[in-house]
Image 1: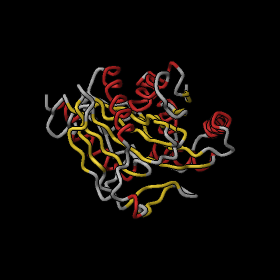
Image 2: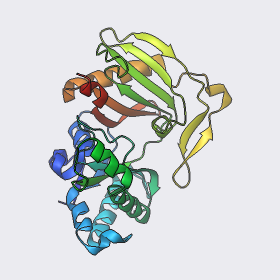
Image 3: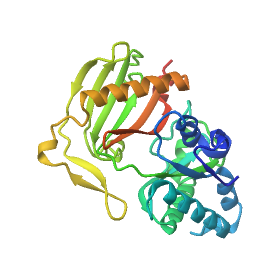
Image 4: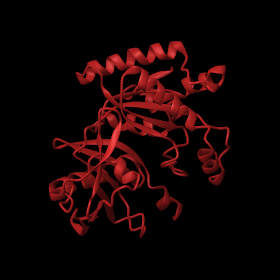
Length: 291
């Protein structure tokens, strides 16, 4: 299969869909995960195995498959041209040995089939970048052993975003959760363009052990084409991005996911109109390596 939806049973097969999609597919039935589909590793290998790999073209039948899936996504989301996030999902990504965080490109707020196809191509091309090859060598992985799937997923208009570690990655304390939160999309936290609020929460009592509310000067928002950085309104800069109720729900989500997956989790989520969405779940690799 060259295209699978998150709810398809085969989308839990890491060899076909990579780590990111396999984890989300496993969780989509029980958690609020934005709908989406992926082009599998089979599609990637067909692209790399022919002359199109040196061009900016996607095979015509894959383009047709993408068009059908994007139209189905429009029906599911009740929008004519859904806004999507296009993310890599390599077979050895988001695993216990190496997360590949920040190594592969992500494209946010993509609209239209042509833009989606170009984003898929750019994800595929990232697999051959010198940055990724160097990272793979550093972690003892073969430079030419990449099996890449690409996730195309409904974009969530986030009021606030949070990254949660179900074990403290700085102190290795497994009795604590660490939450980083900021206004807007999570890209501003991931890219380091904003200093997020930081909460340390006791896992046993779900009580806040410490809270550092940052001066959040920038946030990432969806624009007409892609995303953009904008100033946070002055009255919001020193306001907590999460309420106490939100912190409780985020902490409960991380605890539930840790129990579900069987390892300490690094979770990305977003709040949109008081709905909590799960966007990513992967192992806390630094903690696992230290034990």
